[in-house]
Amino acid sequence: MKEYDFEPIRGLPEHLPPGEEMLWQGAPRWTALARRAFHVRKVAVYFVLLAIWLAVGWSQEQSAVGVVQGLLWIAALAATAIGALALLAWAMARSTVYTITTRRVVMRIGVALQIIMNLPFAQIRSADLRLYSDGTGDIPLLMADAARPSYMLFWPHVRPWTFSPPRPMLRVIPDAARVAELLANALKAHKAHGESSEGQSEDADEGAALSGADAGPNTAAVS
Image (cartoon, rainbow, N blue to C red; front, side, top):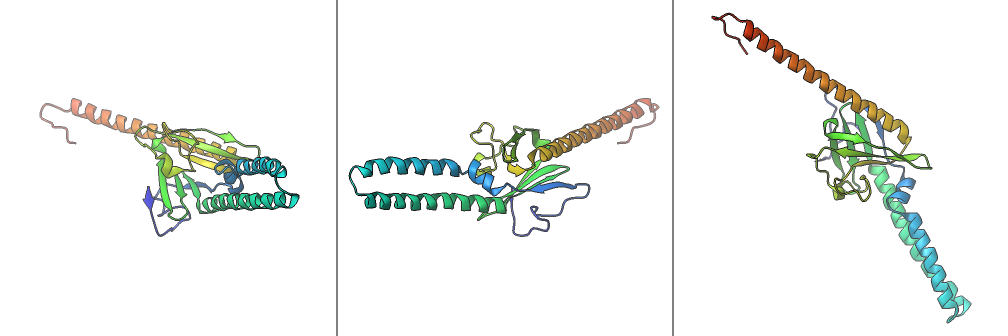
């Protein structure tokens, strides 16, 4: 995690080190974020049901004018609540940048206070995919036990109601299937590169050991 004031590359607090390349950048679709994270549809349904229930009760005690005035008050309250949630979803989507490089996933999140969440591939155990009918999708990440991500710190960029362990998530992003495939390929390439590097290191260590074993009795192996 890193707070920052300067952004040399959009979504990143510093230039990428040599050998690391950016593969993809994106952000949540704010309309989908409003529905999935802030549940504006459910809030709207709640106010509709509330209005019907109150209208039935008021109709037995008040005039038609009184019922209409009461419903207008409910409508104003509903518009305020839904508008506030939609505005928050828009602000969060606008300030969020997800980045995938050849070595990590980076999340720039936050509205009033923006922070960078750096998730190296070495700490990502797996990535899943959930697609929605509107063309967006979620990509939750399963982190290594040592990573210990915070649910509250990542919300709403985290898999809902998954606390043990929390799973940071690229949320309601467009073209999620293509992004998930890109991330899967990058993770595989990183793992293969790591295994290759470990194999070369082991071969080098074995070669050094053999050189020491073959040295004559008056020769010392130099490390």
